[in-house]
Image: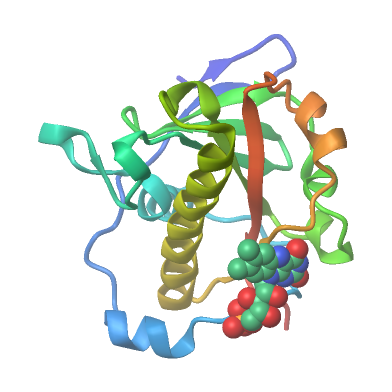
Length: 200
Ligand SMILES: Cc1cc2nc3c(=O)[nH]c(=O)nc-3n(C[C@H](O)[C@H](O)[C@H](O)COP(=O)(O)O)c2cc1C
């Protein structure tokens, strides 16, 4: 039975394990990677969502809690949030599950472009500066941006191999989105990435 909160939302979504035996090669994905800005409203099947989030920043070496994207000092400071129609969820990589953060459809708030609200999924990459110990403010900003970029590229490649479209986005009204997501002051929105089936 799924866990349901008072608003009727699933508070914890256990994701299906990633499908690791996908069709297509890395070289084919690199050949077709590109940005898409027109999406069909069709939602993503859970199996695909699980595979996508695992590819983004999942645990690929459980013995060392290693992740699919590198991070400076192995801080693993980027939290991946999934803004879906049913709410905003934080990806818990260790549990390979989504945890409800906000029981509201915040997709349109994750950016300023028209296509964002039509797409089924907008990922939001949030740096937890409290994990970046001993780094200056400037280093935190640079390194968190670099770490988010690695995750975004994982998503691009998974999308290219799975017939999905995506676009990474820096155009975000962070002043609006951060309070709507209930973020602390030391949690910074770095990038967002819209994902869905291409229109047409
Ligand atoms: C850091 C970063 C921020 C970006 N921000 C946006 C954005 O806010 N909106 C958008 O539509 N595309 C954005 N893009 C996508 C670029 O416009 C796109 O990658 C570029 O035009 C090259 O196209 P391609 O990805 O199809 O090769 C961003 C890309 C990067 C790397």
